[in-house]
Image (tube, rainbow, N blue to C red):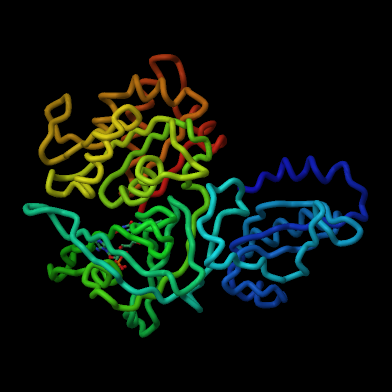
Length: 401
Ligand SMILES: Cc1cc2nc3c(=O)[nH]c(=O)nc-3n(C[C@H](O)[C@H](O)[C@H](O)COP(=O)(O)OP(=O)(O)OC[C@H]3O[C@@H](n4cnc5c(N)ncnc54)[C@H](O)[C@@H]3O)c2cc1C
């Protein structure tokens, strides 16, 4: 996130006549932005010149419009910023073309692609593959779906999500709203050619609380039943904080429940499966994966293959709730597996190069906090204070839904 204290430090040394250039991403279209002359459709970044005296007000205004300031730079008298001519007010940063792929590991917020495609003008991808990733005896329906994105400018980083707009209308006769899905592939896609994007989708199914009828989720059942070659409306990508650390020597702890494995599949492929010029992972990865039954373990073969090949750098623990027992004889949930390993995790969390990622069911953080509070307390440390620091240092990342 943009750090106002850093910006404050920069501006306090300047004279009142100076102009600063705010680079902003994520401005949403609403009544207020529509009054401005910023062209924000399919925006990458918008560059806004701001007089020194108006810096605070402008920050607040951008916040209100849903934007994030990713950089602030002084503008020279000739309109150049750090030696480069700045785009004019409202002018879009030129989107890199297909040829500019592949991207390098994100180094700054401005390198993170966001909202290239918006709901008013989505990208239309094509379904290349749609396969089950659970086995006989599993509960529910979970599919791995691959889309062709070669016809546009959609690009993404591991850990981001995309929006899917299901066809048809909702109960009020309005077009369906988009649903977000974590991207399950690396930026290079499952076929390594930078032309695809993959999702891991669980079909939502529940009994209507009043009628008892079985209800299927609109978008998840649309995706799970998608035919090969079908067109799909895609928006995004979104998300700029659930990203792999740049440091190839980092310790990366990943905690997933169910389809929360999606971004970690992308992380693990990037770390171990793909060979990159710009990112050679030499740190340690630890995945703790909570799931209901063995046949429900998503990407089981892939994960176990990686684990056996890269066991020196990759540890994996399952918590299979309906089959395994915790130390008290109850069901083995993710937090029970963490409690079992709490000492080791606590030691790891104290290393400055450790980054923790949590993805999956809403509410899963509660159990994790409980397990880590106990071990931290043994050393007289207040877990929530410690965790605040981790968050502040961008080392604790949560994406639950
Ligand atoms: C950042 C992010 C990433 C995500 N990533 C993934 C992913 O990788 N994979 C994935 O499968 N999903 C993911 N999701 C969830 C996804 O966005 C959708 O919410 C999900 O697929 C359900 O959408 P739907 O259109 O099928 O359901 P809808 O038709 O929208 O139905 C959902 C609604 O049904 C009702 N409902 C649900 N359960 C019950 C119940 N038991 N009893 C009564 N009413 C109920 C609720 O009103 C709920 O709002 C993610 C969400 C977010 C925010």
